[in-house]
Amino acid sequence: MPSSGSLGRQDPSPAPSTAPSVVFALVAIAQFMVVLDTAIITVALPVIKRQLGFGDDSIQWVFTAYVLTFGGFLLLGGRVADLFGRRRTLVAGMLAFTLVSLLIGLSSSVPLLIGLRGLQGLAAAFMSPAALSIVLVTFPEGRRRARALGYWSMVATGGVLTQYAGWRWDFFINVPIGLVISVLIARLVPAHAHTTARRTLDTPGAVLATLGLMAAVLSFSQAPSWGWGDPRTLAGLAACVLLLAAFVANERRAASPLMDLSIFKIRNVSGANAVMAAVFAGNLGMFFLITLYLQGVEHYSAVRTGLAFLPFPVILGFVSTRMAHLVGRFGFRPFLILGPAIVTVGMTWVCFLPVRDDYPLHVLPGLLIMPIGYGMSFAPMYAAATAGVPQRYAGLASGLITTSQQMGGALGVAVISGTAASVTASLTHDTPPQALTSSYDAGMAVSAGFTLLAVLVAVIVIRSPARVRTAQHDAQQTALQTAEW
Image (cartoon, rainbow, N blue to C red; front, side):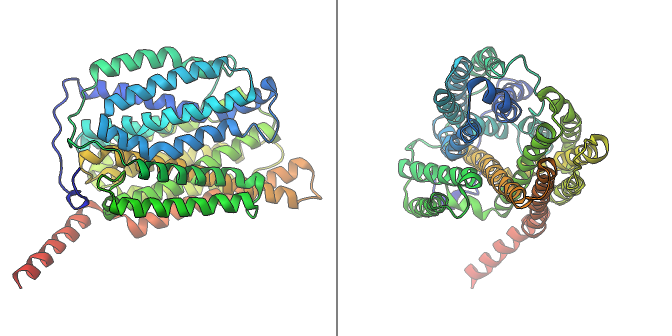
């Protein structure tokens, strides 16, 4: 594997024999399967709890087990895709995802369902970065990639609506789709040439990164129920810090590191990952709270909740698919600032939820404003996180941005739900609906705060491509003058 100092060199990739649009459609369907199984579980949890007899303290593990393995193994999945083949990794992950989905649909016990959800997240951790890295090497930087990432951002944030004939069909539907798409990907998606003859996986780095990220996801996911000062939470956070510190130390001396740390020297890569984490901390927290509000306070059914969210994916898709031209003309920096700022306005609107249902006035305007901002943000985030990254690191860049998304979401849900629980406990003199509504308002304020943080990061860290080129030119001139001296 090339040394970290060679990160800036581009590696050629053979031209694909299949039309890029066909390649994109196939890998987008694979990614949609991952996203759908992440999103639908929130709406389906009350039904699963009732049918399988989950307790209040165990039902959250249906969601947490998936996020735990998905977030923990993403970096490993991205690196495996780079070293052993993106198509091969995607197909293997899809077949495993399909098999586990079938078993989940047939499961009838609480421990089995939780364990299978963990295995499903593990398979998704290999699918998602492999799918995005195929998009990156199929579409060169420029307007074509911007257009592809616009559609990709719509797929990667979709799956909000769920109208189902029983929760098991949320998983059964993956079986025929997974089998057909796996065969088509194996036959039609080109196998990009390996960029290095040395394909040794950094096993110590993989173990340290995976355990560190899993400790973080576990701690943040369980802190609201355990308590932030609980010894288990503190031990988990300490383990996270120690494991990730050991991971960094290992990467600095490993001959074939799991992660080339010099990728973070690309300023926009670091900034885009930070923006993604902050945006998704607010995003998943927002969906979590509004779903609880509609079903817990206003007593909406799962289908009615899905219909309440209907404007969101429609507007998100419309805006996302029109970002290619705008990003090509103005660059990604303006939209990484303006997009989260618009989302913050929409979140602020829903910080004043009433006890009595007034969806058209208090919920709908926010669901009309926020997707405009999200649609403006996601494609530029992917573009900034992958611009200037050599193709041999496409899997690593894909794993990084997806890890930021998942880790940010887990952090956001933990902090926001913890805030809401604390407010509910403090309002002992209010009626239960009033206390719950006040707690959701406080949680939405925290969601808005996370999104505002993304605006600040974008302003301070992200640079436009012209400024990046100028800085690189200045550095080169300085180096030349020093050498001449």
